[in-house]
Length: 340
Ligand SMILES: Cc1cc2nc3c(=O)[nH]c(=O)nc-3n(C[C@H](O)[C@H](O)[C@H](O)COP(=O)(O)OP(=O)(O)OC[C@H]3O[C@@H](n4cnc5c(N)ncnc54)[C@H](O)[C@@H]3O)c2cc1C
Image (tube, rainbow, N blue to C red; front, side, top):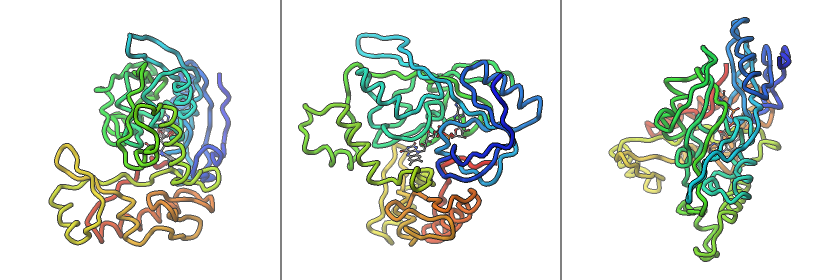
């Protein structure tokens, strides 16, 4: 059985570097060890926190339960046709290393999702997305263990209920499954997606017919390194808020007051607003309070330079939410999962 470590310091295992402790911690490298961890939690009536790279969690205070660190590794090609490949990665694989591995193998489709921190197993939880691509566009299926029965269940795309930074695992099935592996449907020839403005601009000098998936990946990495603080030097959890979606008439009313407001029309007629714009214009960009701050180059990113407990960051987040609500009558939703 995997070792159970009591009173475990999680500071190194969350990108906000909050010094929270877990009552107990287990690192699991196989499905059998995962089952043992779930049994242990049940026997001791401990709540569970499945942990990947810790890049999308806020540890408000100490976690009074069992942290199960998902460390299963392995990548395999499970099926192929003339055009497509089905590639299965275990949940504990590092996401960006997996993307680079696929690129090196000539398996295409993940390039826009380069350099997103975290693990493969957490990627479907919020349907990760960046630079015009979301995980659901390359998703085939996943296997997860049901926490209650410890039995394996397969979910296809419909079963996952993917949405914008959302899935059934954040909603109806929250806390009920632990993802063990994810299978992706990738392409043998690259179908490059460079419609996202910053990416198109960065790649403008390369003729379209000469452009490679490796160049797209490198461009995405370069833009990300310029725009986002590296959690190793400035602790952060990426975007702290989701981009809010409002009815078209609300957007029009805002636009008459703020002609340069940023909005993206959605298929259902609503408009997605840029949360960064709202926060910036409400005067929060670069604001620093105690141990925490709003990043000076990207208002959507809250940082924790003083390595405080998540509670301090959440206090700042609530003040930003109240200010955005008061200024624009728009509700901001926090993106990372808050524990406990
Ligand atoms: C600098 C920075 C940039 C980022 N940029 C982006 C971006 O461009 N796009 C984007 O979508 N996200 C982005 N993120 C957020 C984050 O990288 C993703 O959400 C990522 O998928 C989280 O992976 P993780 O392994 O670190 O998850 P964790 O933080 O460890 O966990 C997140 C949630 O998933 C659960 N979980 C983790 N693994 C499993 C599992 N195997 N089974 C069940 N539940 C599990 C956890 O319990 C928790 O609730 C960024 C974060 C940072 C710090």
